[in-house]
Length: 542
Ligand code: N01
Image (tube, rainbow, N blue to C red):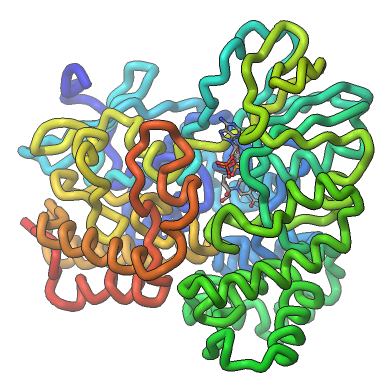
């Protein structure tokens, strides 16, 4: 950042960056403390990831009612129409919040935050935006999610392609007509699965370049009956669901069962798996299963075997069976995020859909008319890059936010990722970040994570105000302790055996290390609140 701005620059008590779930969760809570609050959003509308993620089929993988703000003022007069909401409905939901809370009054859209520097005299941040403006604030809170920096692999010749190229993360807001087109798609993560499922029925043909199969789970999507939902609200079911999320590992309404895989007989196991995978669907097979599934390889193998047996009944093509559900999985089941699907295996099985394994047939080059592997050139009109993000750390590391010790966040993370409780960083007083690195983030239901973090931030600011504290900074000891705990929790799981964005190994050259807190939501929120209860333990206050 260049100059420190001018003396007459505007001031707000709290500056939130990003107009998505996290900042909206904080907005009203902080306003109710009597603070002036402003949101700076780089897009032209609210919604956060649901503003940017508008590719065909984009839809959330958390079910109603827990994928919304847990705020009665909002849910009492808004009812989702589907069990798993799509991006259009989520945008409608954000409009509802905007209207209800006069969000527009507090938000500057098309406002891109470039960087910030802390003024040690005033104990304020000075935030610089790309329009050249400066704003001062006491509390600076980036709420920019874990997926705001897209990743495009360095495929040779990408710019030579004469057709249309789209990245799932920045899909054109006006949509793209793919009917009757020849489409190539790289990537089969959450975005890739949803896109293929949606466009499979309408394109002329679809060639999918797959590196790792996605072990998808049946979504069991359904329309919600508005009357039934109203009844549930009246019965207290919504409040109960929000409350239940506080008692689970991942902030969902269900949790791992208190039993290990081999405590059950093979018959009991089969019945249990059947219930989770086939009857209940959703993430039950992942997060409501035996408590050792993500820790013990033999237990995990059982889960994979059952999942594979089920999925193979939905794929007829023997080559595709091998590619989508191989006998030996490339990673333990559930150590990469499983997608929820509605018909993906039937789409994959269609004759006009080809799957190319890039491990055997790497993409040699993109040419003017298509993609070349050693199998030859596949011509296409449209190339879709569903290749993900520089996830979790990339969002914050791309901002030029200066540490009081010198350097940026990227510099602070040069040798290892380090934060205090996944919410603050030494050298960054009066700054919290939500839904970012070293928090439950990717291992949680998003709105639960942001709700519990927002409750902590609100309480920290409330106490600071009451105690006349104007400078609130995480200590180096607290950061070291959190890093140690992060690694201990991660190392006992099977997650280190998988390559992917959970540990940074999706990006060539990115250091491989745990990016999310694997110790569960309950321990996480306890750690946050204990630090305040124990007289600001882990915080340096002035
Ligand atoms: O990104 P990803 P995403 N050659 O990184 C492949 C959330 N989200 O946008 O697995 C060939 O998961 C890569 O292969 P591999 C959600 O948390 C949620 O799909 O690394 N392939 C992978 O298949 C999600 O997990 C929702 O071997 C290459 C794909 O590209 C997260 O965001 C919807 C490659 C990238 O998948 C990210 O999802 C969307 C290469 N060089 C997103 N490089 C819902 O709630 C990468 N790949 C439903």
